[in-house]
Length: 350
Figure 1 (cartoon, rainbow, N blue to C red):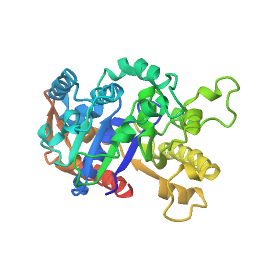
Figure 2 (figure 1 turned 120 degrees about the horizontal axis):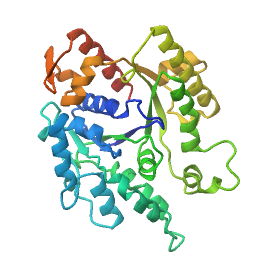
Figure 3 (figure 1 turned 45 degrees about the horizontal axis):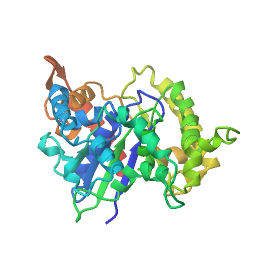
């Protein structure tokens, strides 16, 4: 049995990481009934957790109950029990089966919920990670940064392979670092705007380090410590051009910005191809790179509003009118089908 793990991250906010995670994970679970799927929400805002638990105020109440348990049934509960060396082998103490909370989801999808207290325990995690080693074999930085990575080698069932999707925060705080190192593969959502294009350079500098390390601070960076401890970084699998949060103007303007982002990523590929997954065929020009390493997400408009508010995957959206906070929202079948196909095409690439 081979487990897989995908981390969804970009160091820019507002690119739709949580929304993308919700749609990809729910469709992946539908299309792979012989695998378990676990969403790990490593963002204190817990947006993907609330979508998966049915959205709206009811999901907020469900999340509150998980957070306020004696041992939080969340990422915070799992991480703190690991830090204090408590037995975490029974994943039922931390994960939930989402079909018990959201009837629109298949029975093979689980959640390790997000938790706002992740922000509060960040100083503790940093302190533990930077503790003075007690011996040559003692590696506190590795131990802390591997907590979720070790989890991804397990699964809810001993008899079924599992695929993990790890949602993240745009910050590069310690919990984001833990999330990044937990994935085998990296999915990079971007908007078609200049700040997303500039963020690509930042992403590479943060994960792999700058070309010229700082003479004073260089040895303290995340990338230098990953190198020192010979830890594996995720391989870039897909660049996701995202229109979820865009008020899209002319299509050619969107395409121009999208092309620039792909060009920048292709330049990185030419310099360091080992930072990307192995391509299925030769990549010797930008067009070949785009075909294998990029996908464009269309603007979901009203379908996206309903999906996020009520936790409904596109495949289960079978009505034309939905109530969202007492407002009637119309969702055309044509729009829904086009959006559904886009997500299914991405899932096929994973």
